[in-house]
Length: 506
Ligand code: PHE
Image 1 (cartoon, protein in one colour):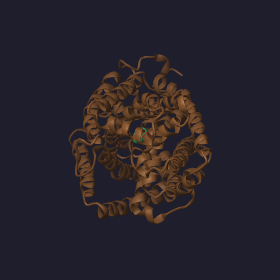
Image 2 (cartoon, protein in one colour; image 1 turned 135 degrees about the vertical axis):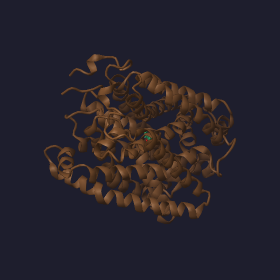
Image 3 (cartoon, rainbow, N blue to C red; image 1 turned 60 degrees about the horizontal axis):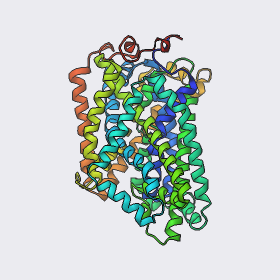
Image 4 (cartoon, helix red, strand yellow; image 1 turned 30 degrees about the horizontal axis):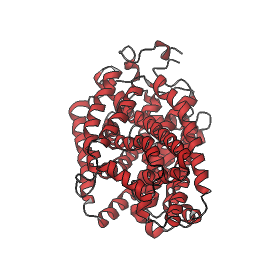
């Protein structure tokens, strides 16, 4: 089989997809959202959603991409030429995520340096250092710039050379370091029990509420890189040798394991410092977006100079995990640009990046408290738009489109070649269970968010406005029936930038 610029091996594909899935969502997002939504109950719902929605959604998206060997717009058009719009939506979502994800990437990079400068400081000192950094108008922007620059550098190397190679080495390394931090945290003694009670033992469903359930669903999509074209794009780079269902299960397990480990690293430590040093939850950041940036430095600090080194190394690893995620976000947009506008990989990667950088600067300023939008900082605003509205909507549409649009037989036979029963289950889930669940959770989630905070209407309206703009753009420029107008992977060969003919020969 001729493979176009795709992944060299099944392992490479799984690692690269896991590289996309594992990132700040696991180590920064999961613990803080757990902290904000009542702890153990959130974790329980998260795990259920990962099983019911995550694995199904991932399998379906990969299949849609693999089947079309093309970008999400073409891929969805190949299911049904009338609904290509869904594909465009899934190219737009990653763009918005890049704009705030890179700001957090910048924060994480700062952690590499501040691990040394923090040594010897107490909780108040650590959080003061962080607030100074956040409030500084240009430092976070500079870090964002560095972070995005690194990502573009990797992506310009192409799928195989850039993404696959980076993921193969770095993912296992991250796992080992996280394991070390987790074990250390669990051995801190005092406060550990309280941390574990909060994190996994004592579920408080009142504190969770429907808002929390919706947050858990959004977090599953975000963490597994679903509902935004990524698994369609990565799936499109695979050939016959990939078992989609098995890969999806492996990636989901890795992703969930890393998120849970991050919680085990953070909560016992947070409660330890709260108890031992008699400090407030806010000083370790419990329930706030800065949890990872506040608690972990305290852990490293308590180890003295060695801790500084471990801390720097830890934040370096998280930075790299974030880069492999941002690379996948950029790749979706890049692939689409290459195939739609027939431009080189280099240009297709740099253009969206410049735009993303321009938007990320106001995001970093807003996070530093310089201004808000409808009472939200821009990061929260973007995060809510994508997690609670756009990703669920896109994931739902893709599931329904694939489940009902692709011939049942073809669908079922391709999910797990040789075991059609797996295909049948996934097909059933994709048609009925998953969409229904997404719909119910999204609607109740939106309802309860609005009832807690009326400003939330602004989030919903903006999300639907964005979808409407995408819809208009689609019908004005992309609607032509057939797929020649948006192209497929094969179109990239011969364009400057992907170079290496060895990639194509197999
Ligand atoms: N899944 C990644 C994470 O958990 C982030 C990401 C989100 C990557 C969206 C791609 C798309 O950090």
